[in-house]
Image (cartoon, rainbow, N blue to C red):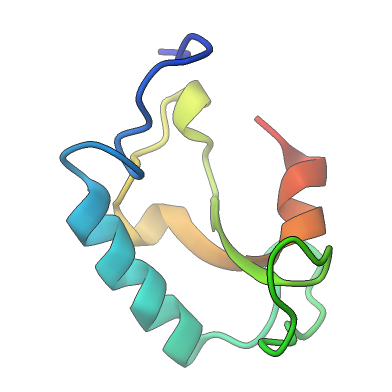
Amino acid sequence: MPQATGTKRLDRDGSHRRAFDQHKKEIYKTQTHCGICGREVDFSQKFPHPMSPCIDHIIPIARGGHPSDRENLQLAHFSCNRAKAD
C-alpha cells in the first residue's frame, strides 16, 4: 500500500526502527558493493555525497516491501538509491 506524502516511515520513526538500525549495522559490516550498480561503496564518503553508503529497500516500502526485513535490505550508493526511487 503506497504511503502518502508526510506519512510516517516505519523504518525511520515507527515500530521497525530498531530492527532496521540493527540490520543497517550488519550490512555496513558485511557488504562492500552496491546492490544496484555492483560497484564498490566507499565508506569514507558521507551523506549527501552521491557515492556515500546508504541502505536500499529492494522492494520499496511504497510498493509493499517490508520496512525492516533483512531480506529486503541491501547496501547501495546514495545516488543509485535515489535514481531507483520507488
